[in-house]
Amino acid sequence: MSNKNKTISFRVSEEKFETLREIAEERDLSLSAVFRDYVDKLVDHSGQIEVVPEHELNGGEESDDDSFPPKVEVPKAFIREHERLELEADHLREQLEEYKRYVTKLRDELDGDEEVIMLEDLDGGEDEDSESAYRIGEFEET
Image (cartoon, rainbow, N blue to C red; front, side):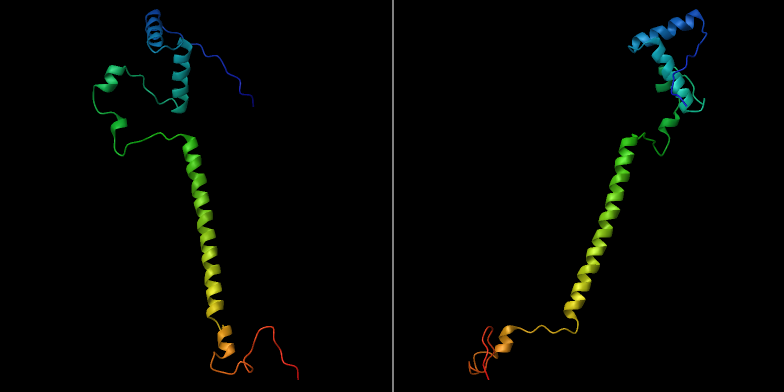
């Protein structure tokens, strides 16, 4: 399907046309930009929009925007970045758990049945004869 722009024609009275042209000039927009914005809003909200003069919007009764909880529009880029960071955080949590399991395994092996023998214990200390003590690199011929 192509993404070609289509033309829409509006018929308004001359008085309303002049009013729209004045609004466009006030906001430093072209008249076609005003209509494009209107059509975009109409499509975005499934035809459920109401054009209200600015003075009625700010004055008058409380609008839906002031309702609780407040609604904030968040850019899609922010949402995508948040999702990316959540996935990265999940991955890091998994890695941390894997490292914790590995450390636990190593500690269990160290605390297990294997006994660590210190070389000083093999020598028997300085009390015994130096000839009967074990020495690294020395051997006796028989």
